[in-house]
Length: 176
Length: 154
Image 1 (cartoon, rainbow over the protein chains, first blue to last red):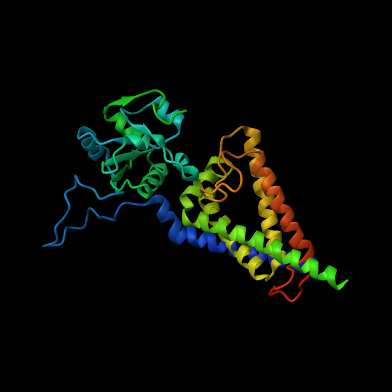
Image 2: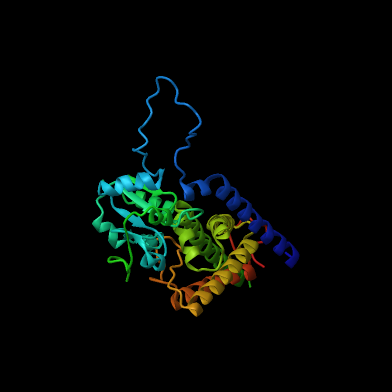
């Protein structure tokens, strides 16, 4: 077999990998990373006779607003900051644990999870906007038994702007 | 002479089965939880976010295709060339991580650390170097015996 055929076949193999991976990422993967909240259209009126869940009780994994997160904060729900430790140190929701997806690497169990009850309603946040670190952490927490996690979709800054309690400093657990 | 050819044939078979099986396993653990592998890619701080998401799927898919072909002995030399090229790229990425002093896990085999434990280090470089050697053997001598390719050895 000549070098030309060898290279052509190698490029064909790589192309199949790229096309397959891109298709998987586009059709299945992105949704897994983002784990978007159940689609709801606020402009669509509720169907008659169909019970609607109260707005204060979002489903597991759903995105919630700062106001809903504040409500959960007042009820004592634990908060998880999924941003870089530098960001956490500059400012975070008061009492929030610092847990990132990296801490789940190689089958590890983040130390901070030892302090969060698996039945608790947990609020996870990152920087808002395009940041999907909180969704990744929610997914990983789900794999180890935390099924009641919500994502504060707007992130930390609106929480701070709203005047809700914040703190600064190194994480007490898992911060090295 | 015939014995020598037979020995090369068995060497080709064993090498491609080892390499193919290992990369099929690597593809399986990555595709089983792409989020973990994506975090591993992110930890290297080489690719921008949208490319790291793509890489989290393209890398295992390429490993899957090449691994299947190696095990079957079909287009085995080309599959070994692809895997060898990927391994060289991985080595370059690891050298970059070590040079920058980043504490990153490779996520090469998910939670299984074969055989290197902890953050990316010299063990990972040596391991990948050995795997490049296996890929070179398959490229050089062909798929060996029991292969779907017509040519059994070079």
